[in-house]
Length: 136
View 1 (cartoon, rainbow, N blue to C red):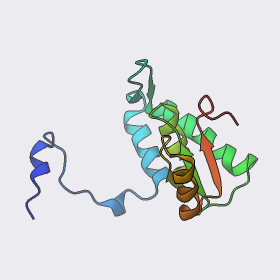
View 2 (view 1 turned 90 degrees about the horizontal axis):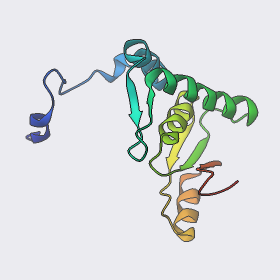
View 3 (view 1 turned 90 degrees about the vertical axis):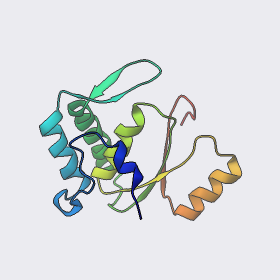
């Protein structure tokens, strides 16, 4: 198979990566923070507000700690995340992944019937919503 998308890669971007060298998601984030800590990791298209890799690290650790210590959820728990494209999403995503949870992405535009099916089908045991859209 001809991989035509490789033609659009920037110079220096490898066509293949050794995923065994990355280790866990937590290790990957730690390495990225060490290399690029003060660089912007994510930028909100709506507001222009950005968070750095260091801020992503700190905020995602807070999310991970909350789910582990306050909610006392065991590793491997499936957590449904229903958020629009906001800066809170990657913070929540990386926090849950680094804590050892399985993230179940849920489209905020789902109808109640679609949401019910997604949650039952995925086996999600917890849900995280964007609070301004879905007050808890």
